[in-house]
Length: 278
Image 1 (cartoon, rainbow, N blue to C red):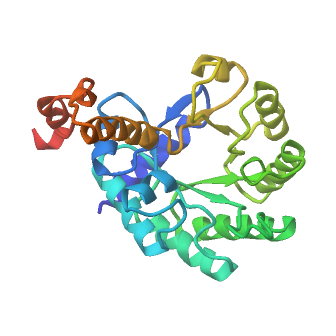
Image 2 (cartoon, one colour; image 1 turned 90 degrees about the vertical axis):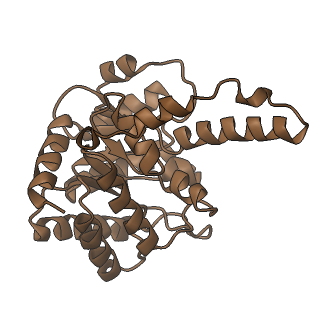
């Protein structure tokens, strides 16, 4: 892989976070990444859930080697900057986290996110001080690499059902910003009031908002709230699975009506054509 090519992608990705508001959709395999690249998006992000489902696994089940191979596959699929959904760094200890962040950088990603969920229902979030130390370790690993990779700090308070999710998210995101996170993200914060509080709390650092279902607001509305970027997590994979299951259920009762909304063979083939393939 060409590091100069990665440098250009990484510079472009950082520039996107300086002003405006952009959509960063989440493909789950090389084909969906290639298709999204044809639609004018300026960057893409991996999705832990979408990828896991494509491998007949539940979210968070793939191991770090599989996830890194997937990141490399998505990076190679297009010329766009890629942000890795790197969960908790796939390590509970800081040495393992540091090693895995270095490996993730080597896949060519332009950004990576580190979240504070442990996966343990008994203690769903890393303790506050430990979570900050982990973010500092990720920052140090990126800096030591000499690569301009964007670090996204994620507070998972809403997703794990914290009793004071908004305030705890703000407390953690401010600390992650101080620890070196370039962009902040509290998935599950979906009400405009919540989003405004988070944006105001960490300004001037950019904020990512997750939108995975129909909402009363638009991208333009989020931009007016000061949101810098919007991702969709596993929602596009869910849309694909929804279409597949609908058609499959029709087939199961002897009907072919579920194919009515299909893209044609030629349409999909055209989406897979890369500029350098022409």
